[in-house]
Each structure stands twice: as C-alpha cells, then as structure tokens.
Length: 406
Image (spheres, rainbow, N blue to C red):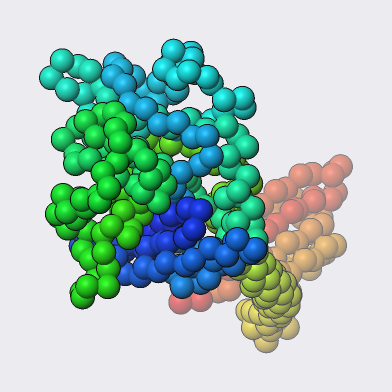
C-alpha cells in the first residue's frame, strides 16, 4: 500500500460484467484532477483484451499505483458501530464477530474495512467488505493476461460515511443501493446529482461534457478513499489482495538500491585504490629521496672528516717552528763559559729548555755566576751532588731569558 500523502498520480480501474472503465488522477496543488479516462466493452470470448486496452489507454507508468474497484462474486458489504481500536485489534475483533454480522461466513474468507470518525458518543462507524478467497480468481486472471498488477482492491462503498447521499451502482448491483447506512431497493433512474456536486468539490474534472460522474462513479468513490488523510493508517484494514497480484515495485527499488550500493562501494573502492596507489608512489618517492639524502650526507660527512684531517695537518705544518738559526753560536758561547775541568756528558735542546748533565772535578763550581753572562738563558733548575772525593755531578736546566728576548 502506498502513502497517499506522497502519491502524485494513481489510477483506478472499475470492472464489471459488461464493461471496464478507469481514470487517472494527478495531484495539482491541493486538489486531484482527472487527467485521463476511458471505458472499454468486455468481450465474453476474450475479456482480458478489454483490460489490456484500458490499461494501455490510461497510459500509466510502472511507478503509478493501480487500484481495482468493483463488486466481487459473493461479496458482502455491511456497516456497524464499533469502538475506537487500532487497525490490528479491529481486524482481530472482526474475525470473531463476522459470524454475528452475516448469515454465513464464506470459506477461506477475506475482508477489508475502513473506519469512519467517532461520533459524539464515541461510537466508530466501520464499513466492512467480506469475500470468499476464490472471488479474486477472475481479476487475478484478467490482470495476468493484461500484463498488469494492482496495489489494492477497494470496494466502492468503503468510503461511504454518515451524511453522504445514497449510492446506487447499477453496473455492480442493479437491484439494491446503499443509503442511511443500510441497503434499500434501487430506484428505476438513479440520481447522481448529489454525488456530482460532492465530487466537484474534491476533484477537478476535464473540460467539456464528455466526462459524466455517473459513468465513473465507482472510480470516483475509490479515488475518494485513496486521497483521505487516514488512508496510510488504514493500510492494515484495507489489505485484501494476495502478494502475487501486487506489483513488485519495492523489490525493484530494493534491487536498484542494492545496485546503487554496489556501485557506491565500487566507486569508493576505486577511489580508495587510487588514493592508496598515489600514497604508495608518494611513499616510495619519499623513501628514495630519504636514501639519496642519506647517501649524500654520508659522502659529505666523509669529505668533511677528510677536510678536517687535512686542515689539522696543514695547521700543524703551518704552526711548526723551523728551529733556531743561531744554535751553533749559542753552543759556542756556552762552551766558552764552562771551565776546562767541566765536561758535558748529556745535552738535550728543545724550544722550551736546554737540559745539561755536567761532570766537574772542581769542588766549588759557581755555574749561576758564570751563566749570568749568557744573554739567552737563565737558570731554571740546578742540582749538584758530589760523587766521591773528585767528581761533582751537576744537573742543569736552562730556560729562555724572556727579558733578553724582548
């Protein structure tokens, strides 16, 4: 069942023993208009052809809901007062009360109902239509041969409520009509004027005189029920057709949804794969760049160490002193100062000092007095020790005389 608040367009097909007729209703603003209508005569040899031609003339799309209306064989319609119940609870209550409301409950029965608004005393008028399950065989066969499916069957009188005019449906029941909540004999000439005035307030009809309310009264009554605000809430009570007669609209929508989900997942996977591929290439590029920089750093570090080593060698060579050019002269001066009885046994000359080991036979050799005449050095350290009675060992360390150097 479709939500009438979201139905922009729907079709109603009314069938009878001699004709099938239908209308297409489309919402324009707040009102529904009859956009197409047609009547086909039923050929007793091939009745499905009339259904097929009518559906073709109505020209509805696959997504346009189709509602059947008419009178089914051995169908029983009645109206009674009930209390306010949910559709599910009312269906369960009706299952138990059918035997009290009708003379004989059909085998394998099906029924649909539509509840009116509660009156001042809280009573809720309910319209009920009961049929045997076999009554649906004829419309099911016609739909199958015509290549169509229906959303629901709606008995025309289900929408009748208190205050409505009398309803006479000579094509469905030529003997009886419904008025004031009960059946009564139909007049010889039914009066459709009150219903035409009522429907013109609810629908917009095509211009001209080709559309007559009496020709499409069953379709208009069913359409009146479809456009009710409570039609969606009444779905559980109106369900009458078996699932094989219903369109697989939701199944197609589920298939389309599943296909769209698969395409969405595939698109996401493709996008993710592209992103992963780009990230992988970026990662490999970054790794290669890192390795290249590491190699360059290693090469530069090796070159830097070699350069530093070379620089240290150059600095050492540059800072290396070439020595003293007047060593011989200084040795000559030192030799002249020493007495003839003194012998130098060890001499070590460096930039910072001159270390001498002197042996002398003189008992009182005054070296500090002798060395004061030497301008180059001064006594840094002097040790004398007597070795026996004849030899004196002298350890002498001379350091540069800075005052003489200046």
